[in-house]
Structures are given as structure tokens and as C-alpha cells.
Image (cartoon, rainbow, N blue to C red):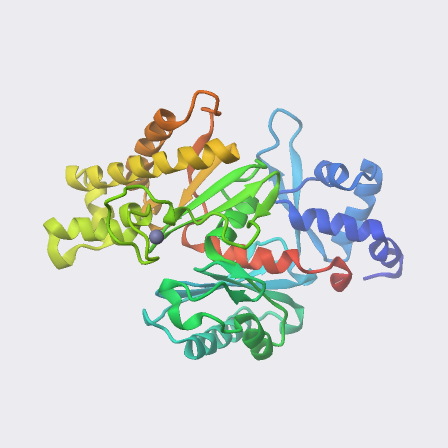
Length: 391
Ligand SMILES: [Zn+2]
């Protein structure tokens, strides 16, 4: 960094520009001016200095500029620091390394034992993060924080209670243990909530301020962005869509309740329904393969799941009035299966929404795939980095 560039970079305005780029995907100079209230010429000078110092980069022409003039989108350079995002799933572990604005630099995925014990799993997480840094040849001193996405309601650095899929994890100080192992600040969040954050900032939810994200995985999770902010509720359990009671005489759910949405539309529910005809070879992959080949039974199963999901979403949309619903997770991993599910969901949502609600709400397929939750975890860690630590 040359002497000339130092003063404006260390100024409050220099930090504000960096923070604006960090928190907006494909941010242009005009976006920075709007976000910071600085003049366009001041923004141009500061952006030029930050690029000269290697903290910002130009990413190319912004395709989403709409009817206006094309603009160059900006991003935070790896030199400004990096983030580690971890998704500790039911059966697998994904670790990503990103820039401060969530651009993927490197990634690792491992299969975990289904009933993984906390100590062994956290060991694996810490080792995997260290390996990723070694692989990516990234200076560990440039990592600003670690985010962890986990499939349970989270309050602070701990899980709320003992979640049914992670019984042994209740009360384990995940954040504290990983902070000690990595020497970095660690932040914990619910996986569907962080998936919502990632799809909103980097994926299919970009450009709207009110968004519902639904993750159709082992269970059914959801995350809410309301008024341009992540909404987790008074006690951290907002968006537990999977445990909305849908049928009074349904199956008993792993949560102890009966007839929950996830007993009808999760991966588990669909695979177990498919086992009736396929036997032990019923898997999610088999279901998606059959749907792709036009199998009527598989398409019917997905459409029925979509119908139940659409009905459940009508309640959520009536209360929260989102602009867009983004549906992700394994069941939407391929276009044909996703189309069957989302078309039925759209129809059921329309039928169940009261006339006063917004019937123009969009239902779209997620864009980040199985990576969303880990990227969201990195973005959570990024949101806690102070720009003063970077400059
Ligand atoms: Zn339940």
C-alpha cells in the first residue's frame, strides 16, 4: 500500500466503501454511492485506491443492471482476508473457503457417520479447515472468522436443547471448542437460516428484501429474510416449517408431534414412499433418476410433495408477505424433479392463499445447490468482521 493511498483507506469513508462492497453481491460504484451516501466522485476515488491497495477487485460487467447503463461489479479481494464456512450436516461435512464477500476460493466435502459423536466430528471439522487452508495456499493469518451451519435451532454459540437428529450435541459448546482448535472467532447458525442468507446474497434470492428459503433435505428447514434482514425470531426457532402440523392423523414425527410437514415432504418421507415399489433400492438418486426418465410414479410422488409444500407455504406467505420463495435442498437438485415439485407447489399455493394476499409471490429453485449452507456460514462469519480489522 503506497503512502498516498493510506490516508483515504484508513478513513471512515474508505471503510464504509469496503463494508458496502462486502455486504452486496455484484455491487457497482453507483450502489456503493447509494449505500454510503458519498458522492459518486468520492466513491470513484476511494474505489480506485482500494483496488490499488489490492483490497477490492473489478469482477466484470454487471449483467443485472436492468435498463440502465451497464456497470462494473466490484468484489472484495482475497488479500483483504478470507472466511471459513462449515456445514455440519446429518451425514456429511462441507468446508468452504471464501473471500469476505462470499466468493468461493476452495472447498472440501467429507462423508460422516450418521450418528457422529461431537468430539470426533469437531476434530474432523478442525482438521478439514486446516487442510483446506494448506491446499488453497492461503495465509492462515488472513482468515477473519469461521461460520458453522448446523441442523438445529441455535442460540448464541450453542444448540437450543437436544435436537432429534443431533441428540448428543445438546449443550456442547461448539463455538468455544472450534475457536480453541482454530484460534479464530467462530459463529454458529441454523443451517436453513444460513442457506437463506446465502441464496439472498449470492443466489436465487438476490435483489429482493423479503424472502422465504425452504431446504428440502433429511428434514425440512426454512429461513426468513424480512425487510432486508435475516429474521431468526425471539428464541432462534423462526422458520421451523418442517414441524408445522399438516394432518391430524399423520405419522409421528421425529420431533414427537404428529403429521408434521416433514413426515410428508422430506427426503426420508419420499424415499420411504418409494420403497413400497422399489424396495431397498429406493434412494433419493433413484427417485430423481426416475423423474428424469418421465416415470409417472416418481413424478406423482414429487407433485404430491409439492402440493403439501404449497399449502404450508400459503400460511407462511399470508403472514410474512415475501416477494419470493426459494426452494433448495437435494429434492430440487435436478431440473425435472424440481419442476414437478415446484409446479404443484405453485398451484397449491395459489389455491390456498386468501384473496387479500399477494398472489404474485414467485416460487423459484435455489441456485447454490448443496453449497448454500456452508456459504451462508462463511457470510455469517463475514458479517461479524469489523472493517477496522481488515484495513
Ligand atoms: Zn415434527
